[in-house]
Image 1 (cartoon, rainbow, N blue to C red):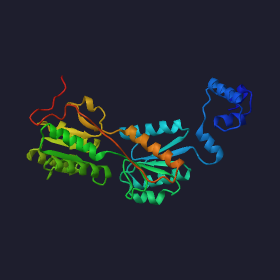
Image 2: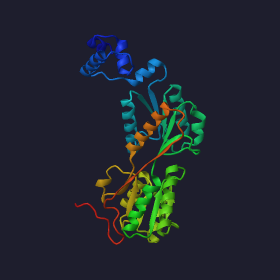
Image 3: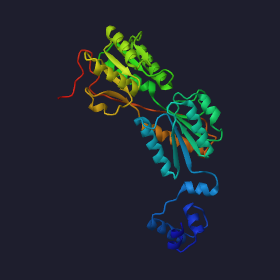
Length: 333
């Protein structure tokens, strides 16, 4: 701002008034200041402005389950980019599936007086939020809501994505479709299972004995798959990447007829698997962007009512989900 004032031949106070759109500055002075701003490439730093007024630390916190996974990496990238554009610093921490660690991260970020928090709980119970989140710190939950829905939340369309997978397989002619999901303690796991059951009921498809949650170890998975094979299952929907990878490992280690397969969430290298895997792709970047937008709206207007945003998924059809009388098309050797 000093350089702009020198170039425009005016005071820093006048430059500040022009930048903030305050009245009382002569038009010719405004023109000189704006010309100097353009020539010098000056950009207003909202975060620094807040700091000077003592109303902000120009920082937000992001508490995730896992920093390494592709989903949370994309979420983090979207949040960091949006925060940076607003002149804010992003502090990030991983709970690694530990509710107590998640609570400590919430406490630590709040103690550093962040302006708001983005929290992606999974096994974290609501007591972590109520016990550790100060009521005056704006917060948005990602990928899982609070029990009372009193906190802003951004969710993926879990049920809709699973419904698209089941409808695709049913459209291919499959009538006995199994579901392999993760631990039912996960809110997303329960949502996707319920979406599977509801869609099968709507389409008149059987589900008795065709749903398995949490059996992702080799022994449990082998028992589930062998039972499904004996029961005439021709297709499987997997509820997340962990389930998809577990099933792919099992099929690789046990050669034989392969069921059609649709996995929830885009899997790294899904398009180069043999056969390429049909997936329900989540919009992780869209989830991160929607969450940070809600957070800054909440920071600006704390009295807004709680809001819930559901981000659509997208079915990506590849060659792992053919009709029941056709073997999956493998890559050419």
